[in-house]
Length: 269
Image 1 (cartoon, helix red, strand yellow):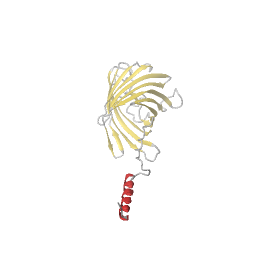
Image 2 (image 1 turned 45 degrees about the horizontal axis):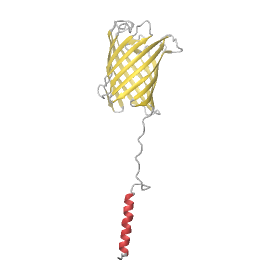
Image 3 (image 1 turned 60 degrees about the horizontal axis):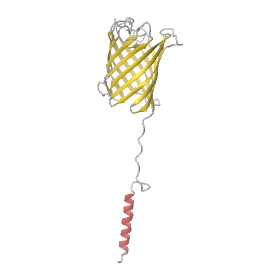
Image 4 (image 1 turned 120 degrees about the horizontal axis):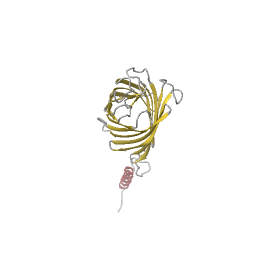
């Protein structure tokens, strides 16, 4: 059978076009493998540099500021690291400092207290569980704490339950338990993240030197806005919290009700 030159030319052209279509979008003619998605960092953390008008420890007004807003303010840096262990588990290490000139320091300079903690967290779905052991070092003594927290991050009320147990130290106060129920609804307004934390708590007898039962209720508002001119993931944070405390539970509080404030910078990484 004979073929015309036109027939041969058209066949070669069709073959060339089919080959080009088979390799379109590639440089080698082989199937491209989708890029591997980035993995989560093994270590994450936070650094907070906050000024607080009061030092409130589970309803106790440590420096006796009461209704004197800012007269006995304190600087409270905090640093925490989280180590991803896989399967929803993480290890936690952190520290918090109380720095002010409200009294002579037994630690050195203006450092009144150093707290350190370590423990574990577990997240599954919207639930987060945290178990921490803490050492609070202040006034020539140490206080030992075990905290267990359950939080449900539903994006609406974000309820939580915290069991704060003192297992040793803090003389003349007793060992015991503070139970704190809380919610923290939040929203966003442009670049500003808003939260409205509300808490209610109860003490065992002698934990703060007084009666047991209902100890305090608090309600507040906090705002956070990114700081774009600093390198890294910095934010400016500020908030107000109003406390109502039960006088029979807190015999050392100078006022039963008071407003507290805070402002500072926070870095997450």
